[in-house]
Length: 104
Image (tube, rainbow, N blue to C red; front, top):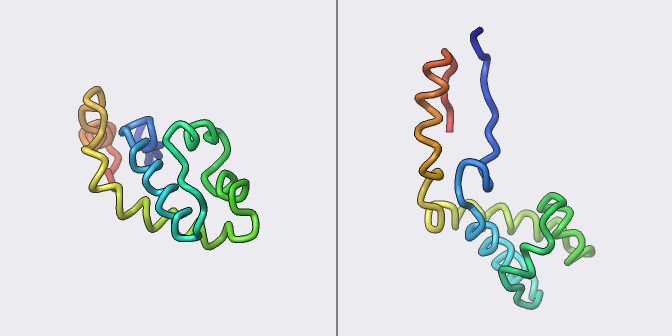
C-alpha cells in the first residue's frame, strides 16, 4: 500500500524539543514583562496546546505572546535541538521505502 504522506509530531516524539519549548515560553513571556517561569513551572502547564497555556498566563495579551512564542521557537530550534532521538534512524528513509516523499 502506497502512503500519500505521513504526519509526525516532532515535540517529544521524534526529537527532544523540551529545551526549545522552555526557552520559547520564557522569551515570549519576557517580551511582555511576565515574570520568569522555570522549566518545571512550564512543564507543569503542559497538556493543553501552547496557545491555551499562554492564554492562561496572559489572557489579555495572549495573541502577542503566541506570535512571540512561535518566533522564539523557530529561533531556538536550531540552537537547542541537536536532531532526532537516536532511535529514530531516518524518517526520510522510512518514508522513501514506503514510497512516500519526505518533507521537513
